Image (cartoon, rainbow, N blue to C red; front, side, top):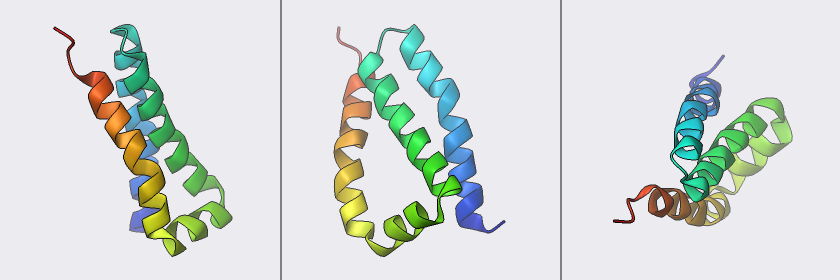
Length: 80
């Protein structure tokens, strides 16, 4: 297993406790964003085609994931 697959595995598994925590604290937007990161990492693990596309089109992938990142971070911010 190369370092990219290990990294995807860590993201896919490591984000799940954060997803649960965000869901339990009623931060559903952040939970959905974190779940998207986890699912993307799982997709890269399972599909060589998805891995090849994300590696080949890194800037397009970044443009897709950047709004998800912003949604996740802003959704986790306290509202008070």
